[in-house]
Picture 1: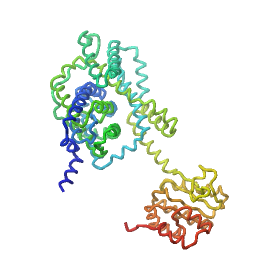
Picture 2: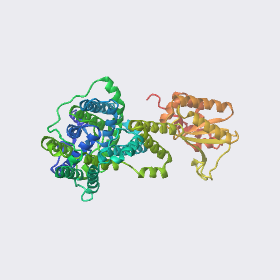
Picture 3: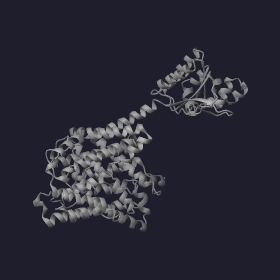
Picture 4: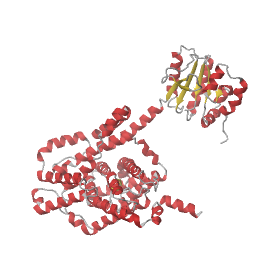
Length: 584
């Protein structure tokens, strides 16, 4: 009994799984990774908060309590949770429609959004709905991510060039605004941003653990302080409050909830998809633990609750940070705890150092981070391998760029579902013929030398027979019968690939049997799976077909049709063909 309780407790609190077994040898890797990611989080958190439309300090708040909470409840031991570019842009996009009258009101909306994301993710995890993210197919995610990365990049142009641009997520509006204001570039600001981009982009070439973003921050602060660049118009972060985040509260105004819910659902799904994808990639390199999709949703939900009540904004697992965390040697989520401690120390003692930090450096951090999200290879790969998926990728990409982030991801999900429905409504079907000199039957469209009888139509349906595809199946069957000049005397249904039959499928199948037999064409069935036999018995279809017309394999059916198998042998195998388990 105690073992069962202990196992159950560990499933809800995965930290109890690894903490009691923690080894001194793990500490070196966790310490190295924790410090590396913590240093990376400082400029990233501030930059992403600015992208979300918040003061930079809220990015640091979002990587304290949420990071600690995920370390307790998360099943991935390397996932680094915090603000990410995509979710930051979605946050800005969602709150924009509420027209906040002040920074304080804007923050309340951000806290409310984090709370709603936490509520949705926690609820999905509790209800075991982790599978929902599967509706975001890889081509859709790739197209959406690439488009969103471009929009994020363009949104930072105003900080990099220091020009006036509207807050928009439509590429056509942003392109026009950039074109109209390009002559107002502030060249000193641009030069600082360019230096930041070069340091961040190429600093890793020195060593993979080189803290390039932090170095860029130090260089930017140094340039502003040394040459007093603020008097020349360089925009800086200014005062950054010190101290730990105090308790905060989201809004429970239903009108605000109604407005924010669509973007909250989008962030919940996109955030979880991004987080779980990178967690799976990293977990494949470590065989000492297993991921649980539903527990991951619960952990991310709790992390977002922490963000909502401690002045943060929506968080999720990040690609780049998690990769750095793993490469730096993280063995457990102790690395995340160490990162959080480093951020806490920064909040307590070092925020004053960021006064002269140029906004252009934070823009450089975001630009370099999102440049890696634009996938050029996948569209080319899909163009050569799968035109259908290529079309989905391009459609999602264009819709996201032109109509916005939220419309893009919803359209992508709808496209994914439409493709699933389309493919499910058109199952693969094959006419079968005998391989010469054997009792093996294969698709006549793939092999030209098969033995085929004109008066015997043997078909195989690869998939379920249900309401969405019965018309397609019937049309195909009628076409094949017509192609044989209506000489078909027997239709053999090979059912080995039929996985399920619903009530519509059962009703239609019964209608087909009666229609064909009334017109002089007999029917038999072979290789029916047990669960499908149960359905056919429940609807009395096997009774309608007749026990003497149900066979264990194709060869038995053909031998019966040719009168080459005696009735005694056929009866011997009949129970194996028609047996059902209706009591179960």
